[in-house]
Image (cartoon, rainbow, N blue to C red; front, side, top):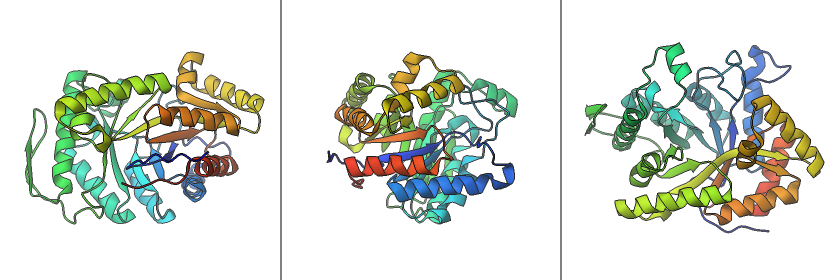
Length: 331
């Protein structure tokens, strides 16, 4: 079953949302992450992602569990990988000045030889903002900040001098040297499925979007995105459509169901939320579910694994996805 769709960002991405590795202490944590990233790339995943949080978030785990800062980690992973794109899924707009963010992502692009992606969203975890001393403005203001940040980063990726003024952020002659290695600068991915503002910002400014949901939910969100594109005078084919979710694959459906039950319990997820988030089953069943999501209009999918220390499971997942759906066609 070879899928021949074309995407511009990623066909299959590997996301690491947790650094709680049983039996691995802090001194060995980075080596474990490197092993997972290298295994994912070697088996067929063409992009690698980490979260932008300062402590673990519910329902992924306890806030006392380890969490690495994403851009330091991504830059450190660059020499351990060769071809995979590297990004945060997604950067919280409230955590960094947009000009500093543009410089940070450009540096990642230079360090990685042109593989950086700017994933960015409006941020949502109020408790984290309070704990670390960041303002957590109302959602409307965060959306305005998101649009400001995307416009500033886009202008600075051209090298500058960049002059952009928005309601909350501005730059006046900001330089960005060296320029990014990647042609046109790192792709900008806007994460989130908010239909009124998030998808509108993606339609107007982004190279990619990232959403959630089952095939019906995905199709609905993409219909909304296309409507925003029409209003903005933009071809929706210019935007790479991706989805984040979990992959729970095993030799048998019974084994996959057992792993899925463990995931639901660990993350305190309802069955309804889990079913809209995870692809669960044996190899054939998982491939059928992936095909249904591609048929709904996606260009690529980004997956969390049940256990990021299980290198065999990571390699198996990447191999199955690559062998059944082909390699990424870069746009």
